[in-house]
Image 1 (tube, rainbow, N blue to C red):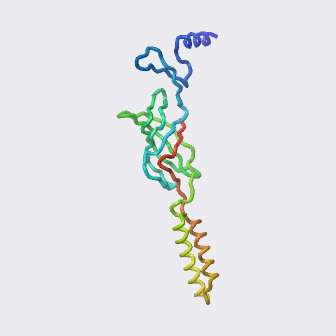
Image 2: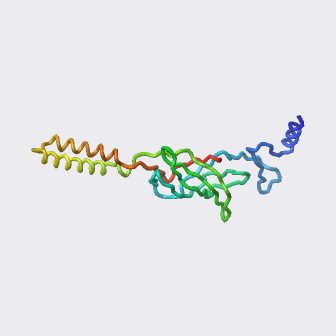
Length: 189
């Protein structure tokens, strides 16, 4: 009961009692402005202009850029802050593990992770040119096998081409693809 009375007084005086809220004083105003903090997650993007094709079995160090202003452990991080960390292997792909945030010349400890960024067939290995190349290799293989076994005909060549496409697609490596503008949501530990 006493806590409710104290909270009522603090609210009437303009103080903030919720851990999800913070006070700021705007320039030229003596009255505090209550601002909601999104301390549960950080919306980031990769700091790279090119699409990344990351091997899912390796650790990759990259910095991310914070999209929106947010608060972490009572500190406000402005949009554009650098989030330091790395992509680490997990079942099904990679996840980003953040260890610090850089704001200007200051570095703050940070503990946040992304959900799993899933792997997929490397799109650089499954485009039309690669499929045609795999088909040509398979067709050549079918022709050679047909010649070795006797008279090569169209069926051996077509069968080899189809096998080349299937084997090429199956053997294409899996990677985690990260586009330059792709949002990576981090959750604080």
